[in-house]
Image (cartoon, rainbow, N blue to C red):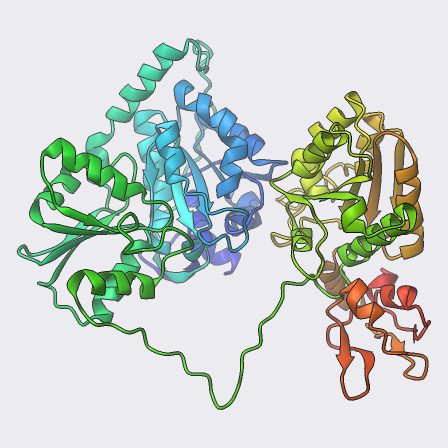
Length: 634
């Protein structure tokens, strides 16, 4: 999508937008003037899109160092009278929760929305957390759009509701909404920007808690009638249908697809499209529940709406049969899709339905693929170096004579086969945090924490400070690949650029480690494999906390730079006379560019995948690999 489209003031014009792009356009239409985020799939494109036009639109946009800071930046703007937005993935709300759970008591002056991009099935996440539950926990209003059009409109409606009740409003997106494209009808862009107007007679605090908790309840009650009228809620019914479907958010799209697949008529099924999962629009939902003896609840995530309906039915003294996740008509785990929703509806209606078979052309067999890092990825070299350093220093299998704590990033793939790198993999910054704990259990083996520089800035600094303060004998390896690679190459404090493309002071991990008085700090290029191995061995032998910064640009980012600079990637050559077919390069480095020629019983290099890093040439025991160039020269 071009910047011109995002900035076009053409009400009524229809454009094709990604769900996340639609959220960004909604922020512009809502007159959001301050936006902050931390990158995390599936939310990243919201800020990427908004930041690309922020200066031209006259707004401020930033990549914050973590989600808590992003929320606090946006919150302060809303307190000062400017509409604001913060966006993050679902687990990011956990990081921001400490601030949110007091800001709900303190309130806001201008409209503020929190976009939580949930990830059912955990496509790019460590869990399937459903943040409608967090909306209930924090007692904040929650909207759940179903289409890119509603995604855009939800920011405008959310800011208006927020301004009326003086509370932040949560907007729940899903992977399938954030990353789907659809027609979006543009609304008008605001003509004037607001000026900050902080009321200095008010202290925005949650203290005293009981008084502010009551204020929260009063504020929420003030918009209950408005929630009944949110356009995302609608009933599609004539009366007399056999069954009622209550579909929340994107579940509405799947429910409509299920009705088509089963060839049902309009008078067979009534549908209540629910766009406000918390608090429920009670009058609208109550009337629907009273009209049907069987209710099928279609929602992605937890049985959040389903449970509320059961409570509401008890209050109303009615007893419809409510079916959904709790009854087994939809799975409790993973994400729902049209097929699963159709199977559940067919079961309820007693229809014999078999999903259409997906036919693969000819005799083609789709191969099973393992998750792998990119060819030339510096993590591969560092993984190899860690294993070799531990093996040589401890004289044993690295899995049995050391503990390696992983973290959140591309390198999280090290959790799986064939890498098998990590003993723990919990959340941002937990590599160093868990290493702290292992260090005080009496385990007399190297304890290594492994994380990227963006994660270090996000949540790795406090546990590193803790390690120094409490004398934890841990070895921290920070893979600095000069970008936030996993979520799409966003800048971070270690890059020296802001979200809006402005130059910024570049923060170096090693400088922070030295400021924390870490006694052992060294910077190594992971493409210099032997140097990295020996540096890790030295760190293991040195008592106390140690930090090794393995600095090398992300391979995919380096490929782009190589193309721009006209650097040709020339793969190394394998001397087939010297190659003994030991497979050491393939099984130990695990680079996807290294392949096996079964007819020759020799290793080979895929020239289309190879990045020309030269690491394989350094580790070949037979010295059979030589030459080549590419991103290793950057």
